[in-house]
Length: 211
Image (cartoon, rainbow, N blue to C red; front, side, top):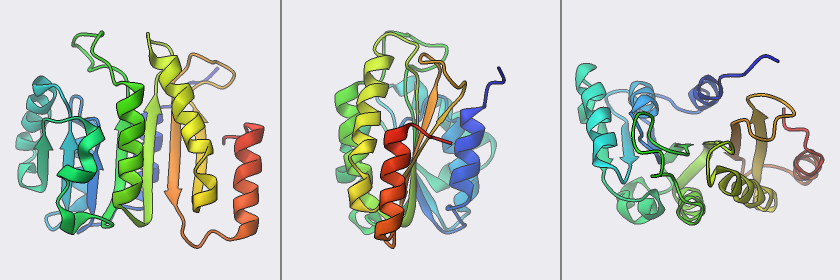
């Protein structure tokens, strides 16, 4: 069965929302691939805030940004993404058009250092508070590693609770019918979502029709 590149899917979705001059958050900087993508999208007048608890992740991202002369567009913050609402400047609140999460561990590093369910859910709640309208949150979860299944399950439960708050929801699996495969959650802030659209979103989510 063909595997979908969820990173490419997430980038394609975010690209529809993010324009030059916009602001974005990379909630899990990792090796900086999403950070670089976001910096390229926001242009010289936009800004990206990147969070990671591992200094080596920020160093890797900073190197990538320097190689592309994009470091001035990005503020890298060595803190948990759970604190993003308090650490992103107040003037940027409700002006963040995109927030990206890529959970799990830092590739090429200690695989025991992983994102934690509690801080991930706190970060998602914080992301909703700073998100603009229209705005997008993408989150890739990895049930296949230790601790990843619980985190993915809790994220899905959290997503299922948001439809009443005028958010459109989607889940995309990298491989269908594989419970251990990575999955992409897409949360779109759609303030104008009408009652009929909310019912459709709820039914789709509950029925598991994620594409």
